[in-house]
Image 1 (cartoon, rainbow, N blue to C red):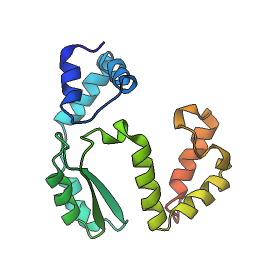
Image 2 (cartoon, rainbow, N blue to C red):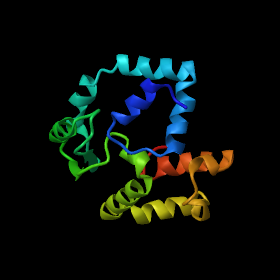
Image 3 (cartoon, one colour):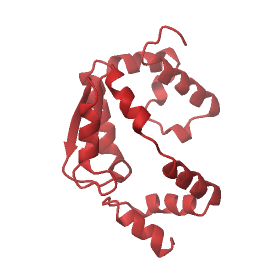
Image 4 (cartoon, rainbow, N blue to C red):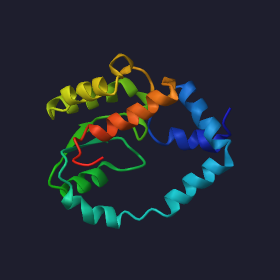
Amino acid sequence: MLPPLPRRLLANTGSALDETTIGHYETLVGMPSHVAGALGMMANWNLEPLQRRLADLKTPTTLIVNEDDRMVPPRVSRHAATLTNSATILSLPSGGHLAHEAAPHQFAEIIEETARTAGLLDTADAVLERVRLTERGDVRVRALSGGEQRRLDLACALIGQPRLL
């Protein structure tokens, strides 16, 4: 069981996490190198260079905002969307900061619908077929063999139809 502080931090995200997901955090919190890496990353965040480059973003982008996110207020994502020429906001009434972990199937549906609307779903299916992963498309990444994971990496690189890979 997590000590009170990590449980309190997770509770403060506003997300309803199940015990399995909390157990994953328990494992991570028990790894000093992970904790040091996460804290170091957060302590050194400098978003200004990213914000300056958002206007150059050409890829259609959907920012999913949970109105009850206590860690990243919705206004932050709305502001980021104004800095681009291609972002839209999808606002969800609840779910908190870790909603993608609390309701992964809901987010998978949102991503699938967004990809379908953007005309990318057929492309995704074609790329999975190209790397011979069509039958494994619904399998979690960690359940794929090492070779399948490399082919998935290749599929991710191909999905944007790069001129050079």
